[in-house]
Image (cartoon, rainbow, N blue to C red):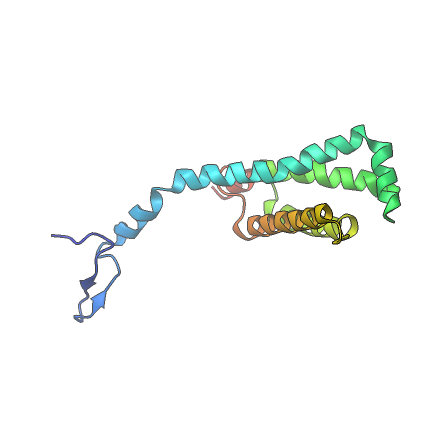
Length: 160
């Protein structure tokens, strides 16, 4: 009788071995969550990028106020179109899973730069939390850059 994949057994040399007896046992154990993983990758991309998409579109509607805020902290308001393009186009690229690794790296850098420029008053608890939020989002983008978009993406279809 075959031992389940998680039971210790003796290998050909008589030593205790925790490896599965069947090659497919480990594959079977790991294939069950594949659909959950695929759905989570898509949902994670949508959740991570939606902040940027909504923020970028919001900046269009509040263009003058946003440019004034940027200038108040020493960032030229003339950079606002680049900021909007980065947020909207970067958000759409991440949601679609197009050029995901490079886009995620760029958005991680953008997010860290934003944290340093706009949320650097650590005496203000709200600003300190906003800084840490940006750092956390950058961490999510780095994970996305390391792991890719997954199969439900433009990048995944190119490989598949």
